[in-house]
Image (cartoon, rainbow, N blue to C red; front, side, top):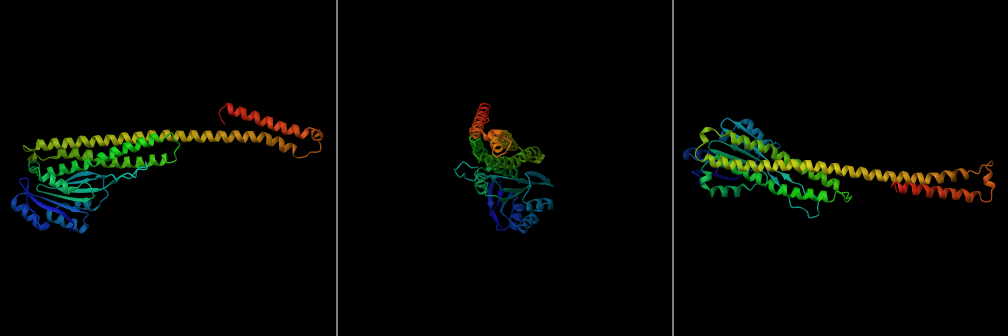
Length: 332
């Protein structure tokens, strides 16, 4: 069993470190506390074992085994099932190219007296989060929803460096837009892909936080619920901010892509104009040279002393005239 930590809390303080899931369940019921079991990259069999011990709904179990899901919150009887996608922003390479942002997965079951977290991501650091919560027993005393609220806060915080880095990347793309850098197209594509990933993580998360804010049963709306509600409202504000920022970035990149396409089209048109101009300049002299190069017998000018020099002069003058005309209209 890939258990990273397993503890039972009573009145906001850790009172036991059970050696197994079965022992956790028994101690929690005996002491009237709450259990928090943290699993990392568990197998399907391990998830089934935990689900059987805490009597979790089979649909929630299936969702936990299936990794690729959008962020969501669902209620199964008296337990909540939450899917989250924290962001892992890798260090940039320093060469001005967009680095890929990766999104992990965190599942959480939140019941009346237990929390089971399943992480398939290096972030957020749930060990550090647990230490912070244990140093604030007044918050941990509010039970499983306090743990869930803190988890949501940690996940939302992972988007901050991603948003900052994406802003820098977009600025770099805009700076290179008029430089005719062939890497601009790639930069726009990669930045758009990262922004779309951020949207997929943040937009549904806003709905998750709103649903959680409105979902608290009357039994949990005790004296400490006001503080917890404020905490959730703050997390929701940050999530909305990042979701709106991602939407703004996507619109900005769409405008950048449109401007880039226009510049490419203009450059191609300029190239076609130059090609057409040179083709016209070369065509007229070539036509004269071709006609007089056929050596027809019934062309009296071929017998003139200055016939061929005159034809050559006509070719040069015609080419020069066409060059000046195309130069004046801006095709050359």
